[in-house]
Every structure is written in structure tokens, then in C-alpha cells.
Length: 316
Image (cartoon, rainbow, N blue to C red; front, side, top):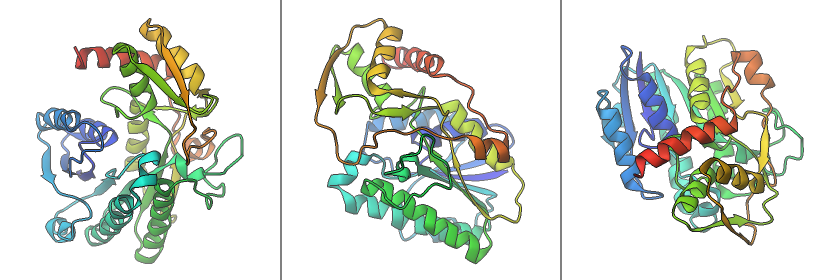
């Protein structure tokens, strides 16, 4: 099969590209290599992918030439993972999020329409906003986002639904819940806390640390994407799925767990809670299990142990 993956130098994009390469697949990767976090990490991911014959193009998805550049390719599946990420950064740079998350997604939808490909795109657990249900279900109300980042992701879902219905496209969105693991994002809590421990720096926790989070190990996230790829199209052209494990942990307990696995005593400082932070995220897996027989396999302890092993090797 032939794949077009945007954000291929990002964490999830790199991971799914690595899985698909070398199996009689053709994988074309797009990334703008932005500076939201370490460019060297992104370039090292690309280095790994090039060993497996990735065809790479450095281009921004908001670029007006994106459609003309790729519209004549034969592509079976577009996997759109490029985005301006992070809740907190969206508070101070909303225009950047508009350009990279909404304008870019319009280009991807138009390109997908011309290619007549299946589209899989990244949404986020942040769309659940003020949701107070014990478990977040895909059909819960998501009309009250608490950050502009969440609003852009909800906007993506609405745009995708309209394109699927109007142009008879198969489009599937994934609401990712705090994906972590080897080659992960340095701005995410598990990487950030581990890095602080090893560098003997203070771990900063926003608010009282009682915020509850559901985490998804990278191999489980990749497994879900693979199951969506393999699923035959049916009369329903648009779907949304959660990735979360349905088991959550407070940030305070997460620091304790990471410290125990690293065998390093933490220095912790509580700071003001950030606007846009959700009090808890906890995923329901009922729909995704029913439709795709998907169930996350890696528990948090094992996942963090795997990440720490990679972290030590990468940073030695």
C-alpha cells in the first residue's frame, strides 16, 4: 500500500512510519521540522526512517503549494499527524494554531478529496473540555473546549465530518490520550519528569497535582492506527475513536511512580494551575473495542520502564 504521513518527524508520525516501512509499503513523509521542541530529536527520528527508505519532503501543510505538489500521487491512506501541539502554547500563540491546525487541515482535506484516499487524522482528548463524566465517550458533548488548541481539534472533527458526508470520503479521527514511550515528546509529563530527575532539576507541577490523566503507550497508539487502516470501509464514512487505556493516575502519583522506576528522589515544586488544563481525562474503550477489537496492552509501569531504558540509551 501507499501512504502519505504528515508530521513524520513527530513522535506518533515517526512511530507509525517506522512500523509501515519495509513491508512492501511505500511511505511518503511530510514535516516542517518546527522548533516547538528539540529539532535534533526530530532529525534523529528522520535519520532512523531514512534507513528504511522513507521518501521525505520538508514542507508546511499550510503551504498553498501542498495540494499541487502531491495531488497526482497514487496514495491509499493519508495519515495526518502534523499539528501545532500543546495546550499552554496555544494561549499565547493562537494565530499559529489557526494556521497550522485549521488552515493546514483544510489543505489535507482538499488533497484527500483529490487523491480519493482514506484519511486518518489526529484529534485530542482535550476536546472533552468541561466533560464531567467518569469515562469520556466518543458521543459525549464536546462543545465546550477549555483552550484554543482544543478548539482547533474540535474544528478539525467538524470539518472532517462535513467532507466525509459531502464528498463520500472515509475519514477517521483519533482522540489521543497522553501518548508516551521511546522517542517521545520532551514537553510531555513522563519525558519531562524523567529528564528533570536525571538532570537533578526541580519537577514543576501545575496546581495541586491531583489532576487525573489517562496515558497511552506508543505501541498501543500505533496498533490502533493499523487496525483503522485494515478496517474495510462501510456505509458510515466518518468515525471518531479514543485511544486511552481507561485507567488513570494523578500527576502526584505519576511523579512518585517515575521516581521509583528511576530510583531517584524528586525535588518537587507546585506552581499556579494553567488555564486550559483539564481536571481529569479518562477514556472509555467501549466503542473502539466493539468496532475494531482494540484494547491497549501496555500497562503504565511497563511503559515507563521501556521509556526510561530508551531515555538512558539516547541521552548517554
